[in-house]
Image (tube, rainbow, N blue to C red):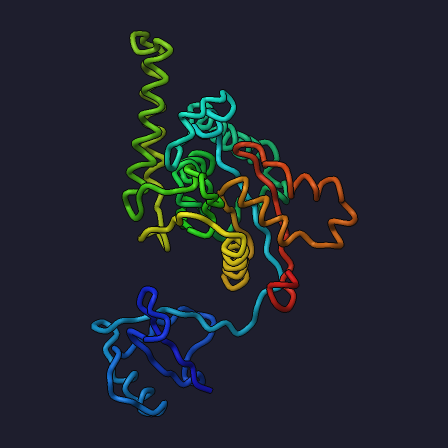
Length: 338
C-alpha cells in the first residue's frame, strides 16, 4: 500500500506546492513520524520514482509533515467542558450597554476573574476533603488541557486550572476549533492576535482589570488592600507562567463569519481530534454557543429520549460562566454515528 501526500498552497486547490509518496509497510504505527516532501517539479515521476526520491531527502532542509498512523482506534473519551468566566461582552449585555458590545475579543471582567478563581478553589478544596472521589480523580488525571485562543477562554483556563497536575506537567494547548461561533455581527468571536502575542494580551488585560478595579473602589491608599492587590498581580504572573502550546493558533485562527456548514465541519474536526489523540480524558475551555452547537449535533438520540428536559437544556441554555459539564463520547463507525 502507498501513502500519497500533497501540500496545497493557500486557495490553490488544484496545484500542490510539495508532495510525497511512501510505502506504508515501512512506516511505524502509533507514534508521530516526520516525513519530507518533494518540492513541486515540472518533471513527471512515477509513484516508484517519487518514493525513491522522497527517501533521499534531508528532512532538516526540506518541507516536512508530521503524521501518526493509528493501528487501533479508541471507542470512548471523557471530556470536561468549561465555559469561560463573565466577559465584558456578558457584562455589557446584562447592563444593556450596547456600545461596549462593539469590541473584538472581549476579556474577563473582575467578576469573571473571581468566578474562575472560585472554580480553582472548588476542585482544590474537593481534593483535600475527598481525595478518593472517582470523578475528581479522573478530572485531575486528564491527558490534555485544550483552550480556545480567545482571551476570555484562556484567562479562565489559566486562572481556573492553576496547579492542575496536567497544566503543571504538560501545559495548555490552544485549539482554534474551540473558538466561539462567529455570526456576522459577533464582534466577541473575532481574535486580535496570534502566536505568543496571545499570552501577552492575556496577562496584560488581567493586570489592567485588577488595577482598574482597585482605582474605582479606592483601594490604592489602603495598606492592607494594596497588599491584596499586589498579591493578585503576583497570582496573575504565576498563572501566566504556564507552558502554552500555540498549536494551530500560531497564525490567524479566526474567521469573518461561520456558516452552519462551517460550524458542523469544525465540530467534526474537533471530535475527530479527540478520537485520534492517544489520551482518553480531556479538559476543554471554550464558549457557550459552541458548546450548545456540539450538544445539538452530537447528543445521543437514545440518551435524549431518556433525559428530555436535560437534553433540551444542554441544547438551548448557556452553561453558567466558569461552569463545567462532563461529557462521555462513544465513537462508533463514522462521525455520523458518534
